[in-house]
Length: 309
Image 1 (tube, one colour):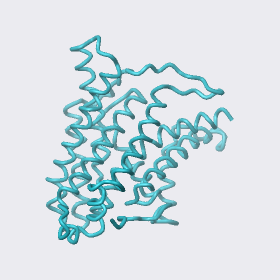
Image 2 (cartoon, one colour):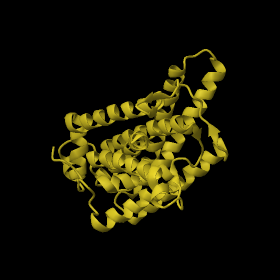
Image 3 (cartoon, helix red, strand yellow):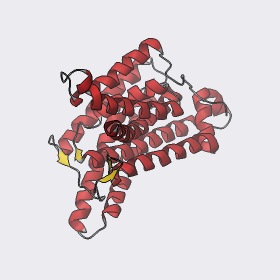
Image 4 (cartoon, helix red, strand yellow):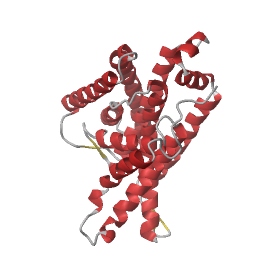
């Protein structure tokens, strides 16, 4: 029972980060019908930017509190991610908006490779240790071990996801986003600026990716130039699982995928008699992707391109 509860906590932490990344995929798809495969690499840039900022602040201000240091690192990460994402949208996607759907997909893959290469040149190929700035003393509750970092990840992710739902459903920008997703040309006739709405969508998704990148690096205490590729693919799987284009679906899919992956990692050794270990946990994410695409391509909550404003 203790193992089960421990894996549930681990799954919620992992699923919270998958959900944040998946929201970026699903928002862009909902408005543009585009899979932004460079999204995971934006996460990488965010984590590495935060690490560089933290190391600089620690060198310049040794006595600065840890929460302030990581807060500044997070702010720098979000700023850089939003700027990078706006440049990507303007340079790589906007000129191809009316092109055949294969063209922006190829452009997205190209942008992903470029970002990975630039990140490798700037930060190097080696793994870098992300400093522990939050007290990480294990807390034992009924045999389950949790840390302040894990609790913070779950709580902050929940707050951000609730805030995003309120933004989309209760604000003028949210109504404009839903109208643009429904029909960009009609939305333009009604006074909505589709270019601004699309850019805002990319910016919001990039901010979430930057936050997830810092969470990922802080949770596992490591960052490197390739760190966003696999979480990006898994978050895409989560978006498909919940229903690509559906914001609640992306949240649900991310949490479910994290739980399934964590439980699978915890029990796969017992189920296979020790033949497979916990390092085979990635198998579950992509097996789920195949199953969902075969039996329910629209996802658990179904595809929803937009709500009517």
